Length: 176
Image (cartoon, rainbow, N blue to C red; front, side, top):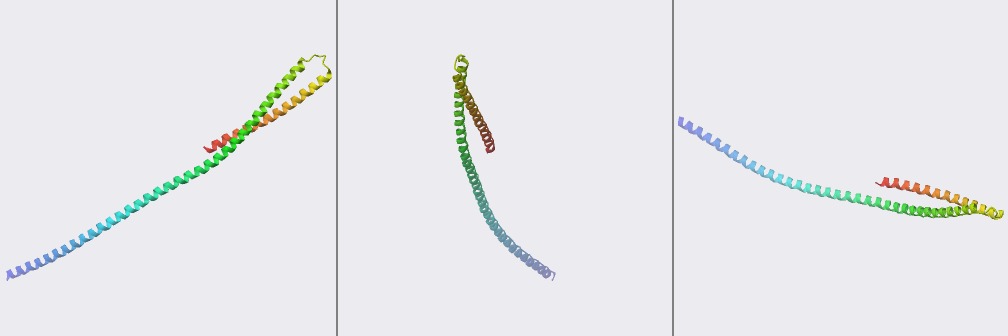
């Protein structure tokens, strides 16, 4: 009977071993199935992440493009305003320069005429009648007055031109 007991123990061990192997095989199959599902989920996640990364890159490029457009538009507006301001300032400068040149020519002409009269007065003989001398003195006085008026006007134009140039320099410095 000892053999029957040994055979029964072996059969029982064999049954337990077969049950354990069957359970292990089922668990391995389940693990492989879970691993395959995990791989599929991982691939799906990787694809979604890649899609999101592509979208993000596309949005960044669009954002960069829009920033460049905004910068370009803001520069165009500033340039348009600056060019209008510059055109106005250039027109004012040209007008001031013309006034200055005109007054300078008038002043030079009067100066020449005044010097000519002074030469005539200095060279006039002492025997000339007093009436001619008085008329000449009045003419010299009038010319001196006109010269002084033109000198004052010329100084005013020069001051205006200098202030214009100072404003232009400060405006040009502000644009940079």
